[in-house]
Length: 147
Image 1 (cartoon, rainbow, N blue to C red):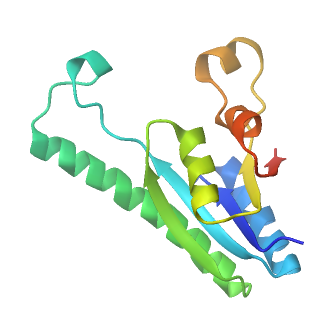
Image 2: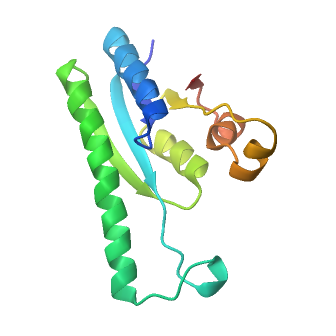
């Protein structure tokens, strides 16, 4: 059925439910799992809404975000491999989460994307946006959304 499943995670309790389902699905179908966490880039200029920081400080912050992201995906990789699922753990730097998820799925030749949705509606959705909705709208790869 599926050969390679991408699961997007941010480490939240909601995304952990999606991770658990993706691991179970991969184990059932014999698929490999690609775990991805998108890490933001630090705003580099005042006009991007960032504070003026020294380059070394920006580098330290980005390194911290990358390490925290890698820790999240490594934890998922450990869980998946305990269930016999071949897993690749990735962090991707991008300011546009949905584009990074779709590009990572394409690059890794995934045939399913699994992700969680907060189910926000109304003003909250307008203000906070929906990365899941963007992936659903723009992906040519099937998407399984869990709540």
